[in-house]
Amino acid sequence: MSTRCTGRSPVSHPDAPAAAGAPPGMRRRADGPSRLLDIYRALDERYRDDVWHWMPDVARGPFDVIAGAILVQHTAWDNAERALDALRAAGALDPAELLARPLDEIEQLVRVSGMPRMKAARLRAVAATIAAVGGLDALLALPAAELRERLLATRGIGPETADAIVLYAAGRPAFVIDAYTRRTFGRLGLRPDDEGYDGWQRMFVDGLGEAGSVELYQRFHGHIVLHAKDVCRATPRCAPCPLLARCVDGRARIDEAAAR
Image (cartoon, rainbow, N blue to C red):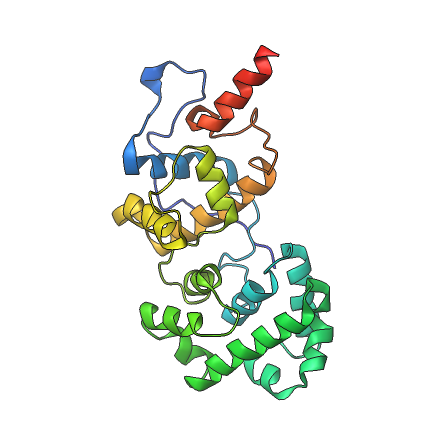
């Protein structure tokens, strides 16, 4: 269920920053909230053609996104995708089927994603939420705030999972905050005063302002995940990082390595 972050970026790149060695006058050095768009442009230059599994041009449908957002909890996406494939092959990747089939059957189908009892129960819970409002189309047609509220009231769905569903399944603006976002932007020296989920989300929503479309939120979040997996890992690879010129932590690591 992989896709590509292809197509024209929703934010143009006329003043994208030059390489780190360029004269200061050639760089767009942003301060405050506008730094977020500066960072987005740099990531988009690097990752716009790379694969990302939830973009709408390849994802197989909104329920794939919903089920995948649950199955990927506490595991790698490859495992979640294998569980999705098993559900699909068994004809069970459907809210009505998840409610009709024995729970132990669902557990077996999703075992590859880990924690099968918990995840089967969570899939059943979200299927019940869908049934309670009259079906998937009715759920996704709810106002974004009501949709998020219903998702958060569903067993096993927290803010990150709810916002992933709102953004990628319903196509509504909701910036997804995850561990990759906190790690990457913490190293860049960009943290909100309130480091709870809502504080991080406000930092992005307020900082991106009117540029914060659904497409930009989707691409920015996807780029952050790709970057954190490839470069800004738990032990980062700072030398090839497209954000090195902007990164407090990365420059310190490079300087420290050079001084040895």
